[in-house]
Length: 485
Image (cartoon, rainbow, N blue to C red; front, side, top):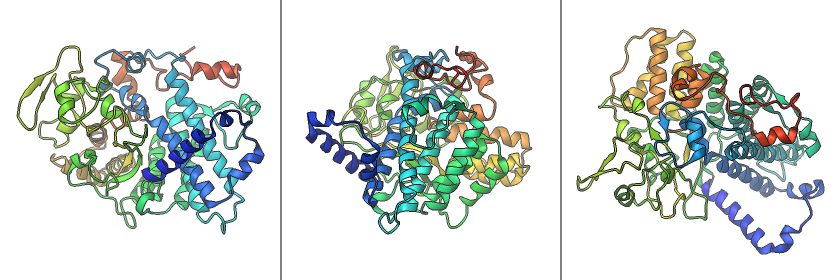
């Protein structure tokens, strides 16, 4: 799918550049103009691709919410004020990243709403992939709302294409209502409409399995463990063919196909196409010339995610996931020559190797962002089973993860022991993949884990962007989150 999005974007860029000044002077898009845009199968194909791209724009910074906010990562070199404020729970509601996050997700929602509303009356003889496009739009809208409520709590529910006046009158709805009225319904509908798989350049689009996996995560978040168990169990049986890769490190070998048996849904990136790559290869690396030269990574100066020593010290030495997940402590050994480079005190002393790949142009990496993969499903399934009193069955899924990691399996655990073991296994297996903070919040462990670095009890959600509060200018329908006034 990377190639489909790239073709769509390049065509759009060509159209913009060829129009010159007249493009800027065109009148605002009217309802009549929109009617022209949504007619053929290709019109809807392009619209869906544009929605994927909007989500890709947002996920560039998702690590700050999912990883940096948690207890396993920190900023060691304070050269980035926003990231440091995320890390130390000192974020101000006026920070531009909050406002861009809010805007980016609502761009996704608006694009999806356009598709959903326009495709309703489309003739299936003309729009032959009508159901699939509708499923994709609902999947993407659900993804956007799921992230929004996890980040900000109560948000505005918008399912049409509103006017400015409509938006100004739309209150923040309780997160529970957003889950029940939009997120869960959209994912259920998407799961009924999306295909089991794709072939060729369409691989990478949302599938039935992706919708069910995200739905399982939603049910885990709202603590509906019975429904979570049911939907996640489906993904472990026929007709689904998901399976763990034999070698954990292959998950992060970007010279190989990222759409393997463990893949369920990624945010797709592509190098060498003018800004369509990802930035984590650069952003997470220490600024150490020897290391950057060896891995052919052009540019440094990121140093945005450093594994904490607390987290590093939890790892067992024989865990096969350790070396690619966490590296310390202020040194690097050349795999070819054995020469050891000692880091300067001015650079990060620990780092993850999960996003290392050759990068010709800074912040233009081929590395995808793994939204959900099969190991995540197995661990959620184990957790749901355990919460439903089926601890023995839960160990079967948990032990699949431990076996691949080269760790001894569990034979018997109490429910409480299993709960702690599954949480710890998620911490190791999914580190620096945007999961830790949201796991802490949904299990009620965030404050205990993060109070030592500044978290207060109200900080399970982020402040709503000050720009939005000011634009709405009505505390009755659009208040700031508690504690941030």
